[in-house]
Image (cartoon, rainbow, N blue to C red; front, side):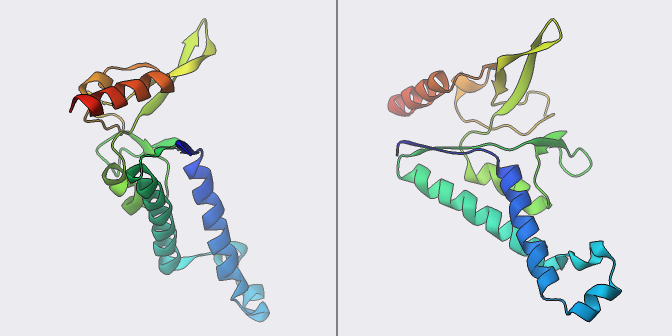
Length: 168
């Protein structure tokens, strides 16, 4: 493959967390389950949160390895307002701080997609920004040509990245 896209890392994280919760619940004895509230039966505990972060890091590291082999990798995630935890107002929506803090180390480019509207109707494609001038969202690029916001046009973005790599 020349291109791999993991569309929905936020969704994948949810599925992994459900698996960890089910695993924690299955280890409880039936008698103990009856004594606990439903929410306590699925509590993954501190070790579960560490496992969740570790699994997400391993998946992201696998994408990183593919990138080092010349395969273009893209990972998408929903965003959330985290202004109380991070310096950016909006960051990728991942539970736990450690994984989100490490994201810039895994990726050369982090783009933030914004919906576009015309006459109160959402239109596609969205706009993308690889640089947050006001620090309101997580974004990253070392490519000066990608620092401007624009229409999310992957072929154009890839052409800019590949041309810059050739020039360097």
